[in-house]
Amino acid sequence: MIRALYSVLLWLLTPLVMLYLWRRSLKQPDYRKHWNERWGFYGQRARSRTIWLHAVSVGEVRAAAPLIKALKDAWPAHRIVLTCMTPTGRATAEELLGDSVTIAYLPYDYAGATRRFIRQFKPVFGLLMETEIWPNLVAVCRARGVPLFLVNARLSAKSAAGYQRWRWLASPAFAGLTGTFAQSAADAERIVALGGQHVQVTGNVKFDFDPAPAKVVQGQDWRNALGPRPVLLFASSREGEETLLLDALAQTPLPAHTLLVIVPRHPQRFDEVAALIGSRGLRCLRRSEWNGQDIGEADVLLGDSMGELTAWYALADVAIIGGSLLPFGSQNMIEACAVGTPVVIGPSTFNFAETARMAVEAGAALQGQDMPTVLALATRLLLDTNDRQAAAEAGLHFASLHRGATQRVLSALATKLAHAAPTGSVPPTA
Image (cartoon, rainbow, N blue to C red):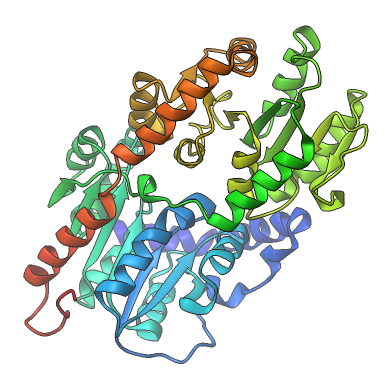
């Protein structure tokens, strides 16, 4: 009855859902594409022997890449269907994985749309990355006998409190999962408190990220072209954070000849950030206008491109991680560590709480409580070669030390599938 009321409410909100897509499309036209998939209508021909993995947007898609490779190695006769929810997530999937997987949008959580999705792709089992819990989706998979797992699961205290307010709807969904593989013990405890069953800790698959060699070389080539000048990167910055940085720089300028690189998290904000930089009297050169060599008289290089974050990390001497200066919970810092770029983070890290804590303890990251403090820490690293080298080495060791979650997930998944499905319905791992 509760889920039925939820479904009715969702239908009543359909005009608002369509208005949301239209408004997003004003800044990001790709939101106008593939609308039929949002309601469970697909052009692809249905097949069997499919493994389905859902990664909502860019961060989850990048985290899923090593897991997808492991799944293809373990079940080589199966195709992978990767679903996401945002155009940037879809574009990232196409860039990283090409046509090695089938890429589509997961429909919104209408019962009919989720049934059409399951009928269309006939998954042998499904994997939801990190925090994606949809009541109708879980119920449809359970009714159709499709084992469904929450993988690389994380649940901050803030998110858990939000789910508690809707416990009457969330708890049956958590309980309906076949299994949950959590990033940390704290994540596992919160999920169990919400009704999750068969929960185990397997670690964070984001540590299994392998920097693309071509992107590392690209960044190193940029570094060589710029010469010896210091480079400070503000990576995956979020709305309002660039203003904080530029305000702090007005009070405490960077060391002489330092190049500031700003790479906004969302492409629809590229023009906005470029205008903000110009309004401060700073000369801005955009990546879309840059040949990778001479930057002329530019004060700031704006990364208005997709798929080059690894190259930006390889270029930088120090990286400030966006999303951590305002209450967004931080973006992923592991990629910077894996490239050997010293990291500075702000106070908001609830999306990566355990990772941030371990990184700071390992000396792989420095943490400040506001933008002036973060900028001071970054400046210290820019000026002190020994401290910067020590932080780079600590980051590389930190990223390497915590690898292995993907294989732990794969092993646990094989065990769960063997017990969850009728004999012969799910193939053993290779």
